[in-house]
Image (cartoon, rainbow over all chains, first blue to last red; front, side, top):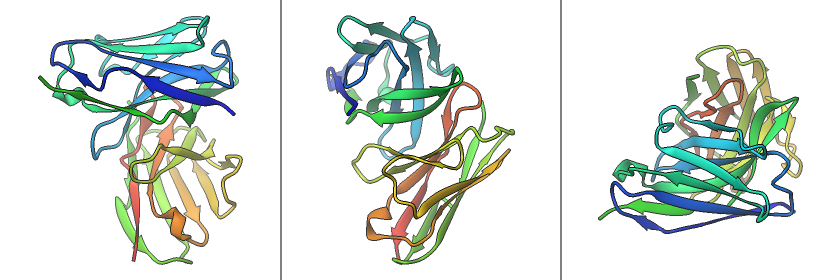
Length: 121
Length: 107
């Protein structure tokens, strides 16, 4: 079955860059859309952005100036970079496959286990 | 952005109860609405997509309905493993947005 696994530092200093990688198994990253969703402690879910295998991206406007999502088809991985982080970026970061129908993105399934990233000095 | 409002924010119910959760959107989204279940410390799980399609492997006691701006998730007979937080998510427009969640607790 399709599995996703996030990896990256669990602690990032304020003003620095948060970098995470998601490794996909059981599906080719050349198909589907791939996304990042985050959840601040005790809060709801927020879509950070997503990428297609062509490199086409879509970012949440609230984060757009700070976010970059990239894809490495040779490794079946995609990555998230979020720069100039503050304490407000502390969250569990999930990677997820974003299913599409008739060219329109739809629902997130499945999800990785999530990784907690704390922003603190 | 499309705003998603879930109600109630929390509810208490007993095993065997029929439970209905509501999601309202700030503009019409046809049936571009999905539902997730999240248990404490766990990963969100897709239950319903496109407003009423049951994800494979999800028990049939879960059902979804609605179109336009008003949607419901119904659990026909609440089971102990159903106590969780439920989120709706729209995919009509980007940015993709989620509701604030409804927490279903044990009475």
